[in-house]
Length: 390
Image (tube, rainbow, N blue to C red; front, top):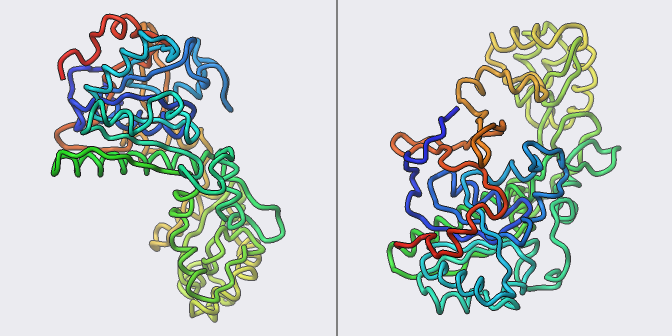
């Protein structure tokens, strides 16, 4: 895991980001920017943003919810009240120096505050203004709540996942929020490149629904162009478009994930002749539920470790289904140092979390700032020493 070292520059070193975001989608995006070296100043309401006090995972570590800690490292925190003229003027002063402003309020909120894109671009014409929302800034859904689970349901992703005879299946993680957060970062970086070439700032908008549709690029393309049955399979195959023998199988002591692989060579390895006639994609697709049912009886006779050793020896695509305890001890996770220790604001303790996935040869992602207390940097804000020199 990386050592805490504020002196190590990241690839975005020098980038100044004013962060109005809360909850998950926006804070994830600004944390990615911060991990890569950007100077992110998080503007929070008095007593801190919502996730400091509530979350799906509201257990507390060193006084903060784990849900907040997951998405807010490497930032500074300032508490503001935009109804106060002094705070508003200081915010506008920071906008003049900022490269990027990020917000994920409901559409129209920043305009009502007098801090919408048109207002801020007058203060800083080269500003990149990035907005994240549930459904975009206009249209028939613009006033609806754009929450992760709602978008999973609307987008088709929930209908696509699970077994045919089961209810629609909700992902085990906030997939819509996090995928949209990644798109928000990409949009910001693209707008920065445009500014580097032209000197022009612009507005970037990302919404949950569009992003979750984008993650289904392959499946929707098939649906839109061909009359292929995209119904979910009956057995635990996992995806409407895959062929047998792909799927999850119970073993003597756990579960095995078997990915796409031709049936005839698998039949030879397992010494089951009935697999060999499934020798085309069409036959493997049509017979996928029957293949799964019969193979399930076979895999139940030995341990996951037995099957992994046998199948890896023949270059069959497979893996054990791991829980979080398994994942924490996984050799590749340990090798990549993907679990980080991040200091709290006072430096007395650390919390453990997932590290940045980016690898750079010259400008590594790392921990440059502790996760801040709410309003930890109020004094710098009030003294106007944040980004004193542009």
